[in-house]
Length: 446
Image 1 (cartoon, rainbow, N blue to C red):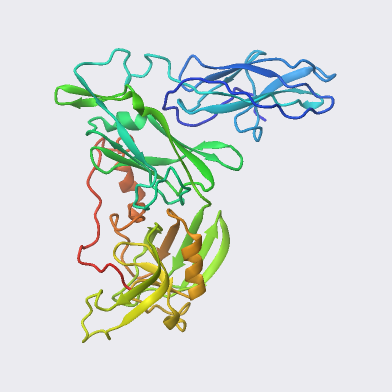
Image 2: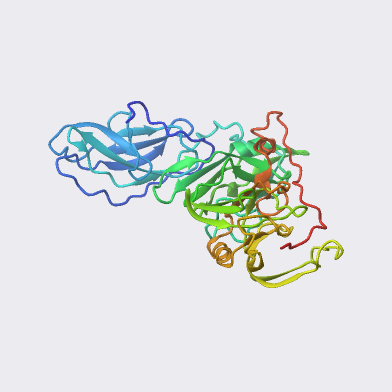
């Protein structure tokens, strides 16, 4: 247990109002202090602060109260209150993100009953943010934005369904943004565990796809079974100057964008061992024998992400591949079951009952991942948009950034950071469009 001031270390970047919400206290425990009563949760004197104000317990349970503790995750982790009795200061919070807090007293008999929960939202004091002057400059134009939690072509509305951990959320502004660093300074991304309620800042960076669109990519994948909150404090932010007018964030940009992740599903395909190993929430759940692309038809290496593009039956033909009959025997594989597309260039995971002898042994497809019927069906039925499949040792090139839902995950991290105005070491932002594969590649292989 810490004996110094409470420090919750996350980035402080956004602004909203304050509120208090009450719920039932924890059950009593014999001989320990009663529950304190939280009266208010107010903003502190500086950025990222809250003050939890409370009245002491009605009874100390027969043993003098020695101190008070506060929890921000429903009682999983407790921190000592460093302020005077009646007020518990919280520092280094994320501006604009609501926090739910509970308080308890401690004595020689142990921790006391937990208070009813209350909530508050830290905010920047007026006039303290240089990007948000009290008096806005003129002339000015307002800019709004739309949010897409599943921007990497997953085929779903990310606000209505739980997404796999490979989703990529995007903000698209209504006009070009001259000062992109000002935008990034006023966005915070956090993940709250749906199991424990614990909230953590997400390590990652915004990457600008052009002058109007920015995508947030975590350093690793998103945590599973979590609520992801993008806290925007862009209302009233001066985002640079366009011509003679200042670009200022609309009032609607003071908001939280929220989406949910499903369980963490990551499949790893190794072209050297001819196996696919599937992990869910970090635990190995399946190992499948597979066969990948043969010489000159190598399956691509890298990260691929599943979308809604699935077909219970699909027909693969040599005509679709534009094969020369002199080099390859023509074929037509009709009504192949359980097809899950990975790239628009034709890579699928699908059943291959004709290839059982090479599954787990050698590669012989035209680029697809061949599987047993029951294994391909399992993938088809269990996966959700945003689930991740990582390929290594295929002998092929790496997935192009513009080649499907997983493409952007294959940009090296150092290059992704060059697309962030805050992180770029040169101060300039790489807004170049991502590259896709050749347009004359087939829509389906086999």
